[in-house]
Image 1 (cartoon, rainbow over the protein chains, first blue to last red):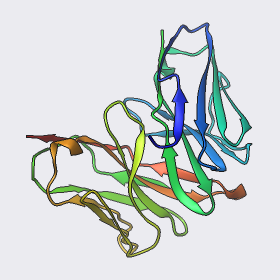
Image 2: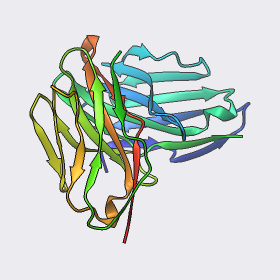
Image 3: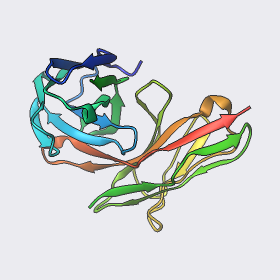
Image 4: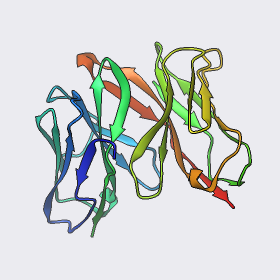
Length: 113
Length: 115
């Protein structure tokens, strides 16, 4: 248990569905991140939020829409995904400038059919 | 730009063998360096870290030394166990505007340890 909880752990969705991934941390961290882990690619940073403000969108397609309502929660809204979006989506959090360690959730395994 | 290069896997060893996984980096400034481990079906866990040159990070028998002169952070363990089978990621952090930090990962090296 790392203190970062992701739900659901597994998700299967059709290309016309809309779903959301949830990430929650109660570590008092200021920064939260979404990463995508595909089978044959390195970990890809998707979005960064710092104090609820988005500080990076790493050229992610608009079918992925992040939301950070507060410092403890991060969502990734999904719509009209493609099969190539199937991957493990990892959420992470860190304190920010005074801590260089990121804590990861267990990930959501997404399959787009 | 900032990047991490680690040795291609997979790596297969027998129990009690010596492990080295090479990692080199390219970065402006002075990054912090990390090794993360991912066990099957899990997210990433921090294994060890070093925040400045010549620092040695260690945990669970694993060690890595921050070598500025060779821009390297190689992971070593003297005697691996079956339970060490996992994917290992080398990473560095880059300070960000606004206080957040950006983790840059290597591609990962899959280690399998056989009994």
